[in-house]
Length: 471
Image (cartoon, rainbow, N blue to C red):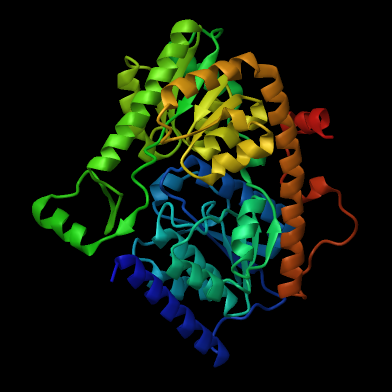
């Protein structure tokens, strides 16, 4: 039996125990004279810029819609040092690597759970992560508390995990970020509404900060900037392995694939070969383009794990500058992204967080997230797969197309951002309605509200963008 199966069985058992305790009248119940306590469960504290940005905006939106004086919010973090300065006025709670007892203990202390991991229901990255998402939603759900998946993505799940999702998330509300995810969850009988990602409203440091950072590494303030966001697409999923952990502890084995605790990346000769081909193809395509066009190239690691990929590409390209989330926080890194003229990214949020600045971007994808986004933008011709055997030649053509079609690509991006801001506002409506359904005595706002009233305050730049591109 695999460790993933052990975790799934463990969490399932704790869900059932929570249900029994609740039926016996044991557990915290919200009272109208109390603040509503909500726990946001996600993948924070690893310096994953996308995860941190989308949760930051989720918290801002919920506080704006429900009212700061009526709620008390908590968010999970895997490392307090790596989320210091994030999530203002929100309590941070340490998520241990071995999480089932924590969920059983912590979730019942709150009046509801908002699961906020983007890749919420899929086996691509880690069954353990999806098990944690399902567990947090389910422990809240069996207590008749608020149980919401917010901005969720769903893809293939291993059969046992899919059964667990179907059984325990049927009473949760899941607001997905695309129709494809609705289809996946609909087949499992899970109630969904169509939403989007929540990073659209994020406001980083002023663009001047990014410009200064670029000048410090040699930019002349005029040459177009090409940003590339590489990853290691092939070392997923992460799986728990006691055997590997023991071998590492005793003999130092599996060091290169160790993630943390008992968790290990996918590894082996085939994985290394695919990764080498990806890095080489990406590097060669960028090198060919910069030899024909005058661009200033930088590499950006959107997650701490991406630092190795950036280092390898930098070596291939003769030492181009690297900016990593290991060294820069989300406000700094997104400021830098928005200084770009062109972008090639294997990170979904590298693309999303640059779009409000109308950065012309292309995707080299490992899963459906970037694929769905490019389809929404009408830019399928700017999408490539990480394992494409002709990746080098195709990527060179795609970057060339980005430059050639720069203005039309920017136009499509602007329209997509404006549209998604309205969809994100609708998510706020769904959330408010669901709170009122679960807790009828909770004092929601009265009167008629415009769509902007369901978003956190927009920056002047976003307001102008909406005015220009709103159809």
